[in-house]
Length: 138
Ligand code: HEM
Image (cartoon, rainbow, N blue to C red):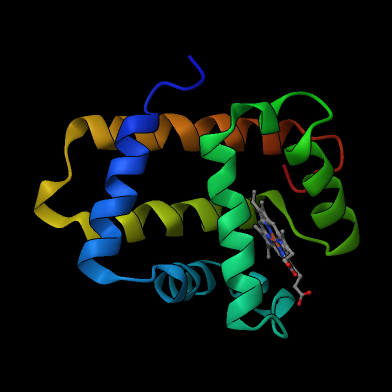
């Protein structure tokens, strides 16, 4: 159900920030290692732009209204898939990079409930991404 797992997501992000500080560099390092094509596409994005993008991504978890038909995520997908030529595989890679960074940052305190919460929240977003009409690679 939308909203489930929010406590775990907020909690793990806080622990992660305490343990490793700013997650932006690691998320993008992992993202670009998983998707060299995305690295090319984002070649001229600086750390501030990357930070703003990650902030927007996090709002998708915190505000389920963003996933409603025609709402923020759909608008952003139109933008990214059509204007930037982003692909759904790049989204898969981005969210994999995000989960791996947070899981690693939380370390031994990571629980099964955290794993479930992140997997559910990311699946909701990725299902939406893969079903978007502008997706060409799936
Ligand atoms: C749901 C996931 C995503 C969200 C919410 C999101 C959001 C954003 C936002 C808000 C910006 C503009 C930042 C600013 O200039 O203030 C941006 C820029 C950008 N994003 Fe994303 N993004 C997402 C995923 C991706 C993915 C998977 C890619 C694949 C490569 C991507 C590629 C880009 C590119 C190329 C730019 C522009 C960079 C530039 O102008 O140099 N984004 N994104």
